[in-house]
Length: 477
Image (tube, rainbow, N blue to C red):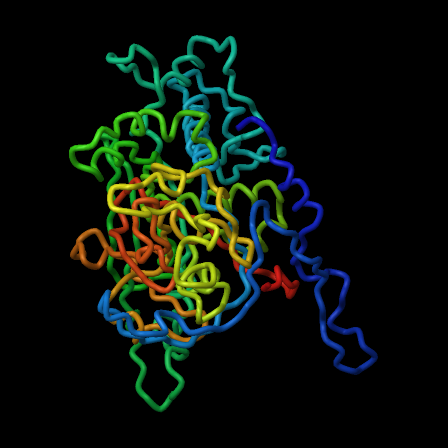
């Protein structure tokens, strides 16, 4: 947590997407020659694989009477994107949790109630002018030899466990606040501030009344509870497209018990996320909402390290369902799995994925629960565990009619469910199947869903980032 990640420093030197300031619009000797910015090739993001743009037909390509599956493939195309070569691990997610912990401690170290060291929070520039307050991450937390006030601030995020007799991190305080600008809604003509630009046909009378919009907001009440609200009102300005979220980011370690009745899974509850032996295993017990919070933090973490050029970095995000399926099937419509063939095992008896090989037999493939990421061979795009190990969240909302609602270019269906929406509206698509699933359920051409706030011992995630530029990625074999 204390060390600087090397790849960020490399990105700082290698990344540039800004317009060149050396080119004048008046140059060219009277001829239109164009204005070109100076851009270097985007470096490979740490731990990611580039999936080249391509097209294929999504969904099963043949009927399967055994499982009552009807072939209904839909053609689509997706843009190039970077994808994590493995699922997000406990170690990587723990870095997020500890960052949240440290941000809370820094806030309290700057609070007058804890001694009020203003160096932990910068509110003025060098000239003494007020600026947007932000935490000073260059100021180290005094872990050793803290003063009495500093010790209270540090200890405030921990709690005493009377059963184990040790102090441990207080999961209830690990709340991460972030904001997302909804560019999609802001760009729609029906939401434009200027009534004259809301429709193409200017002969049609245009109402000057501002359109209605809905935005998400959140705050923490006096009891320390997160309160989420969806506000619906008349559009007043661009800030109405800025959504605020506060998410408790600590994974649900009790999922191992709650997902399986009458099973002794308490050791996983105690150890899976906390024990160093599981550091390189996929994080589980993370909801769709928490996965999105991680992606936002990961984006900000990189952008802050790069500086001003960070504004041009495409954000990390969850993959769309179409991106996930294209990547898993390596763009081949004939593939039901990330590998060729219809079976999860090779002719020599080696398993291609971590799944449930038989009735009650989880260990035939060498694992009882999850496996360390990258244990099995990658697919032809260089992506590991696109079948089995853990199911993976996508950004795509689930509805029975999704195939009729999405476009065939970068298809995506999003629905930001309000708190008061029926639970059915809060379903999100998960893909790939998990360590507890039989071979049929880890197929890459089938979709499943889960509620966006559910935390399961068999669902994790990985991130993607739209590729900037036109560099080629890995070649298909």
